[in-house]
Length: 86
Ligand SMILES: [Zn+2]
Image: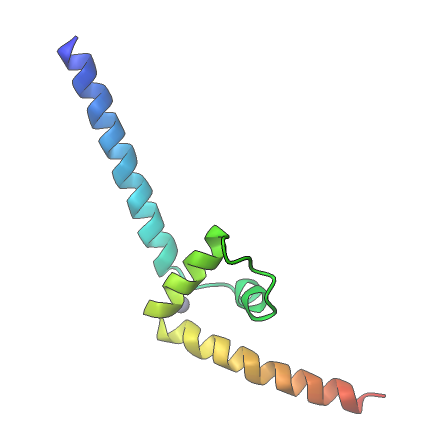
């Protein structure tokens, strides 16, 4: 009986560690252009897991900070191009 309790406890601990590791790996993974676009146009909800992951990642990744910055500049370019097209 003790063995069973111990086994359940160990399984629970492993599951908790895996959950934390997956969270860390997810935060380290760079955001896609689609995610940055969603964040930029405000369609990413603040209570969303994707939003929190993106913010957490943005804090540690200079590359994605630059990509978001480029996205903002790109948007100005699109505005400029579309306003000239008609
Ligand atoms: Zn990144």
